[in-house]
Image (tube, rainbow, N blue to C red; front, side, top):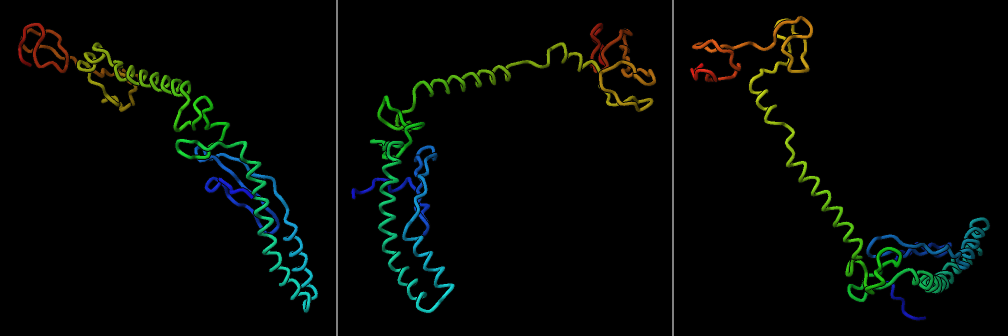
Length: 214
C-alpha cells in the first residue's frame, strides 16, 4: 500500500461498527465526508458479545478471544478503508507547491497560477473587493465633509433661546416656537438697546446699530 499524503487535513470518524473519514480544506475549512463502510469484524465481535451475555461460560471465553482476533483484523480493515477514502477524496483537493497546504479545488485553488489563493489571490476578485472598499471609504469621506448645520442655522441658534418647556404653563416644546402652543405665552424675550432703543438679539453683547455695550 502506498504511503498516504493526507497527514493533517482529515478526521477519523471510525468506530468499532465501521469506518468513515472527513477530509477538509486547510484554507477554508470546508470538505467532504466519505460514505460509512461497515466493519465485518466489528459485527462478528458484537454478535459474540451478545451471545456471551446471554449464555456466559465458555461463550464468554470465545467472545474475549474474538475481541483479540477482531482487534488485529479491525486494524487491517481500517487501513484498507482509509486508503479507499483517500482515493475518493484526492480528486477534490490539491497540495499547493508553495505553502504545502491541502486546499479544495472548488473555492481555494487558483488553476491559472497553479497555486492556492493564499499564495496567488484571484486578481478579479481582489479588484472587485478593492473597488467596494474604495466606494465605501468615499462615501464615509463625503459624510464627514457634509455640513448638516448651515451658517444660517448657526446664526438662528445664537439669536434664539431654545426652551424645553413653556415657562408659564409647563407644556413640553418640540420646536423653537415663538409662542407656547398650549397657552399662547411668548417664549422668546425681546431685547432692546439701552442706548438707541433698537431691537437686538437676546444674546447680543453690543448693539448692531449704535455699538453700545449691553
